[in-house]
Structure formats: C-alpha cells, structure tokens
Image (cartoon, rainbow, N blue to C red; front, side, top):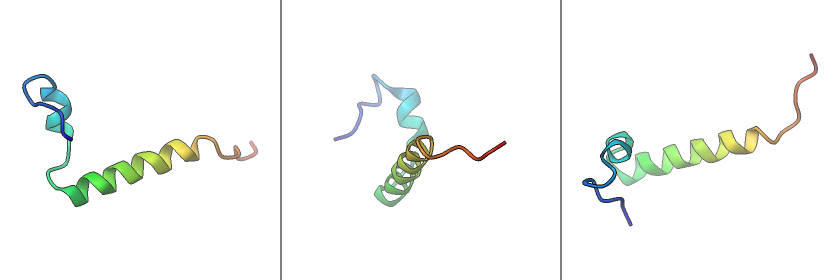
Length: 43
C-alpha cells in the first residue's frame, strides 16, 4: 500500500523509486533505531 501523492507530496517525493531501494532505506532506518538502544561508549 502506498501513500496518495496528492495528500502526501513531500513524503512521496522523498521515497526511493523502486521496491529494492525502499527495502534498503527501511532496513537502514530500522538498524539506526535499534542502534539507539545499544550500550553507550565510555567517555
């Protein structure tokens, strides 16, 4: 399911064009979010 471009033009413009790129971006976001819950380096 995709967002309607007439209601969300800015979000649709940021979305990668193909399913592979969308998967890669989604995976990158998921990994970054999970990394925020990891241990902090000493310092």
